[in-house]
Length: 151
Image 1 (cartoon, rainbow, N blue to C red):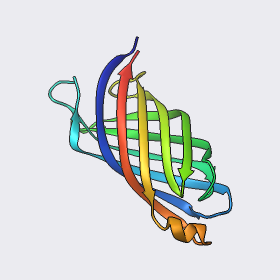
Image 2: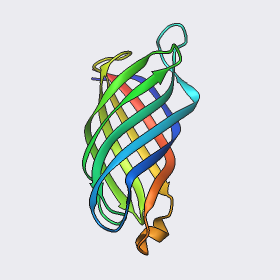
Image 3: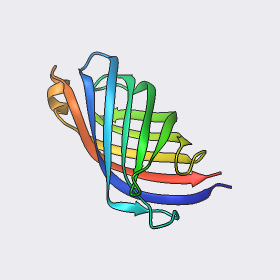
Image 4: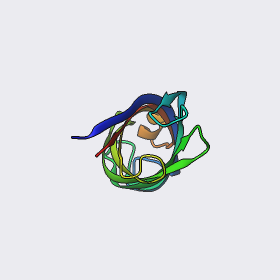
């Protein structure tokens, strides 16, 4: 059974390049997550999870599912170190243009190496009405819940 290490919430901003349109195509995605207040851990001395930075790609449109996700990133800790994470699986879809995403990651190095991170992100897409009318979505912002467990 997995050992629960930390859980908390933050806010994030995604940037899509090229912007998402009604046409399904591949996009590069950059996500920046801030955990404020920082999330406490069991690491001494009072090390906390402060932020995450993710980058990758997926194939999507403003009305369809998110497909072929690939992503890696870093978790930033209050002691100035980072942990690397790599995407294992993702279930994502768009509801009226708004992305909803559950991702599972493995921690590949740093604090909690070999741990598993689960994130659940819900965002309100900017310009979703414009996208449906032929425009595009450049960014999305929203809330994310993170849970980290160890084997």
